[in-house]
Amino acid sequence: MTLQQRPVGKWLPWVALACLVVPMFGSYFFDDMFSTVSFIFKDPTMLALGWSSTDYGFYAGGYSTLCVFGGLVLCGILLDKWGVRITGSIFVAMMIGGAALVYGALRSGAAPARSLAVAYTGCMLFGLGSEIAGTAVNRSIAKWFKGGNMALAMGVQLSIARLGSATAMVVAPMLIVEKPGTVYSLAETASPAFVGLMLLLLGGVLWALFVAMDARFDARMRALYTGTRHSGPDQESSSSEDEFHLSDVWKVLTNKNFLLVALLCVFFYSSIISFKKFGGAILVPRFGISATTAGWMVASLPFSTVIFAPLFGLLVDKFGNGTRWMIAGSILAVAAHLLLAFAPQGVPLWGYLSMALLGFGYSLVPAALWPSLPKIVPEKALGTAFALTYWVQNLGLMLFKTVSGKIFDASGEAGPVHAELMFIGLAALSIVTALLLALVSKKNPQLGLDRAAGK
Image (cartoon, rainbow, N blue to C red; front, side, top):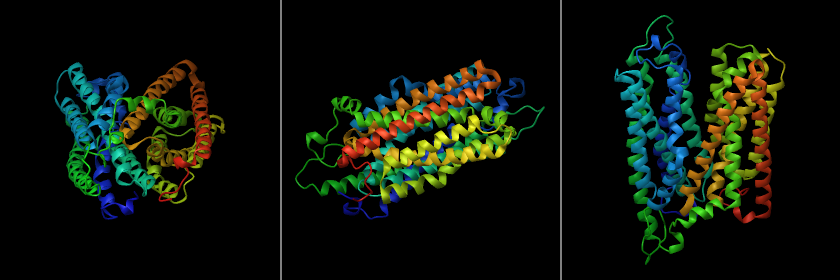
């Protein structure tokens, strides 16, 4: 059933999308709220909070703890079992509650060890809530835009979410102004968290509005199946084959096409997100620029997706050829990392060019990658598929961030080039995986991986 054939107006899915993107904007803002002001943690004596850089790193690592150790997969299964309205609401509330706990810890005035423990707990809850909320959002987009502009809708969602990161990178230095020789107060340190929490609360209100819309949507869909019994909160028919069973998890894990998408996700995102964490340490010595300029250059990556992710999503919907977009984006990532590693040193132009290529690739691949999952996994197991993909992605990011740090510690001045060799290898593996997906698409045209929307 196409989007146009569904019993809702053409504009209503976009209203639903507007409700879904705000929680993700707030989530990305909160996650990156200290990215460009991490200098405040260099000297604990100049911070009323009393945290060191090690403490901050420990706090930030809390985001992935519950996700990596099984929580993400388990909750993805619950998402398919209970539906997006119930499960999504639980984890949107967890995301907001975790953020509130972090804000409370930052403002508490407690001893550093105690405030850090509370903030770490809050960050764990926030991280798991954010990841499952994101899974619920993607599953909802796949449902509301089935047969329509799904790639465009997912591109818009991704664009606005990453705008949250970019906004945090720009706004945080305005809230915490660098003042050498002065002590940063608790209120000043917590100000980005307060803004992020307010955004998340607004997102929670809009999520509640979406839940009401989604319930009405399902009621209309049930009316199309006269004589059938509704089987669940998010399913359109009551036949047993449309119900989620735990055996479907194994079916997803043994789906070779799903595994290729998951591997592409790991290789490609690790080549970019791991780079972002060490971007300044690479750009400053390689191209002779200031730390401030390097910060703006790295921030250009999420900013670029604000414009190009929806544009490329629209092109994927209109012209198809999704696997070719994945190949092209991966090639751009390889080209960017080759420039970062081997371009003439001390010439900022090469740094800007590499960031431009990486920004294009960072928009191209996701525009085609995420809409491909609903084409290869049944809708009843889609939450599990997204959660498993995010889980594998988090494992890869944890591994390659750690390896990157060890490379810098072990390589001295050669660290930037040695780290880039790893990123080149990851991007090259992205090309290989995308080529394999293109081969799958050619042999199995019924999957529609390269088909335009509505065809």
